[in-house]
Image (cartoon, rainbow, N blue to C red; front, side, top):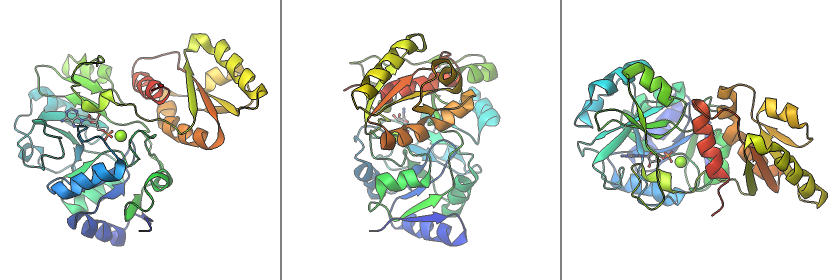
Length: 331
Ligand code: AMP
Ligand code: MG
């Protein structure tokens, strides 16, 4: 199979719809990262996603719906705070976990009694969801454990020959996966941080907790326990305060003939002043938007990426730090 990258128009949407209706997953853009989507009612199609990605069978998928879709038909209870959050943040990079009505295939939630639902704001995603007129179960459109894709070319690099079509919606503007929020309890709980921050949620509904996964315990969001987002090269991470050590390693490695690059934000790059850098950007939004893009660029150029963590680690940077730490985690 030769995978085709198609611009989003009437013809490519019709092609995608036919593929979805016949059980073949299609990659599509969102404002966070590219998704690999299948009809959430079709168990075989959902299982194909796990196969294509090599995704562990206990890591559930998020169901993506059009902004006018009746989410109440898929989930049994939507608390008042979730309704407020939906008004404030949807469509957008916020996934909400509810008690499921068990209408979609059980393969979507890997047997859990909850369902994660997301309404993406990307125009191409909305057009695709409207055209197929089905809830679409989708994880990120990369091989499992690799860096998430933020361009159609990234999807192609991982999945060429494994899927028919990639709908091309340009570079994703968000750059890290959606915030995952547990909406089954008294107050919302952040299971995975993202661009909609805990602070933003608390400001809207008064209270918001953060779930911290501890090794050895059953994960509330199963994806948390896996190594993720890793580039195909060596990685090291240093705290902002340890940047001199990072520069020391950079110099040592390059003098030994190891092609090492430093990854950091723009202000840190000015402080350390080295030649080979992967600069994430100036603002927090830029840093988030470029993180995966630069990790993928880095794995092509470098034998070793030495990341210097951002100095500030709350808000959006909490999400960036979480991904960067996982990308650099040694297993
Ligand atoms: P991905 O689409 O690859 O970014 O992964 C989706 C994320 O959502 C993973 O971290 C999953 O564990 C999480 N997720 C999906 N469904 C649920 C659910 N029902 N309950 C808790 N977390 C979920
Ligand atoms: Mg993923």
